[in-house]
Structure formats: C-alpha cells, structure tokens
Length: 213
Image (tube, rainbow, N blue to C red):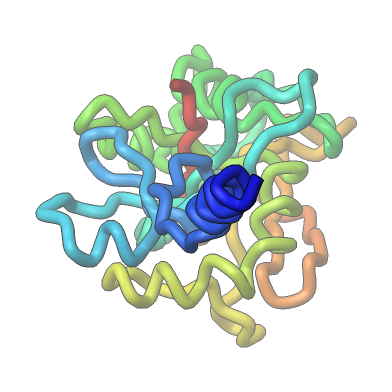
C-alpha cells in the first residue's frame, strides 16, 4: 500500500513540474517574417529571419477573410489616392467592410483613372506578401491595437504609428459614399477620427497584410 502511494505521489509530482512549451498560437504583437513565419518577438530576436510586419489582429470572425492581419513596419511615402478627380474607382465605400485588399485592386485596375497610392503598394509585393491599403474598418482594428504593436514595431526597426496631429493621418482604401468620384477617407491614428478628403491630395499610408495559413 505504501509503495502504491509513493508511486502515485511521484506521478503527480512529475505532472506538476514546470515546462516551457513553444507557443505556436498567433497573437497580437507577434512578428511576421519575410518567409511567412509568425513568431513571438523573443523567438524572432534569436532567429536569423527578417521582419516585415507585426500582427495587430487575430481573426475569430467567420465573416472576415484570413487568420488575421499584420501591419507593415514602415509608412509609404505620401501619394495621391487618384491622379485626378472625376472617376469613381469602385471601392465598396462601406465603412464597416474589411475589404482593403479588394479596394486596393479596384483602385489599381480602374480604367480612366490612375492611382499612385495603389501603385506604390503593389510595388511592395515581395516575398509573396500581398500588401494593400486597409479599409476604414481595418484601420479601426489597427488603431485599437496600436499600444500593443508599437513597441514591437520599434524593436523590429520600424516606425511606430504616431499620435501627433501633423503626422497621424493616413489614407484608407475606402471612397466616400455618394462622393466616390472626388473623395476618399483619411483616418487618424491619433484619435480614430475620419476626414473626407479630395483624392488628388498626397497623404501617407501604412499597408497591411492578410495572414493565410
């Protein structure tokens, strides 16, 4: 009887021992590398990989495509949404739609109207990472995660998302409903506010990537 109790005690003690298991779940703040691997920053720090973005959203909504979103480490140089005014570029103009990828393609392929903004994003398509300009709804997700992703962006050598009034405005890929021929939405990373803006103005952008695994 004593031997059985000792054996049971030994078994429970072994089960209770602390072990460090590899965290394979994707989380906000994890690093996206150029080869598509996603890992925690401590894992990235001791790897030989190159960071391209930081996870800012993990998907639990079946209506949203992909497993989550990563934001690029750096801004793109200010560009015009459209090289002139007068043509709708056929984005959804839906403030609740997570459709930046589709919107950016519509901007890029719109006949009769060029998009320097979309062109600059398509030039980023390296390593199989399909970057695009986020929609208003996707920018809202990014703004909500800013305090978690900014420290990791900085550690990876990128530009943190700003708060200052003169630096915080970014193009979205969403045109203004009813004014699609003339205006699209700017989004403030400082306050989460929207500003309808003529499409022939140059403003910076911060591309994102959909994670599909």
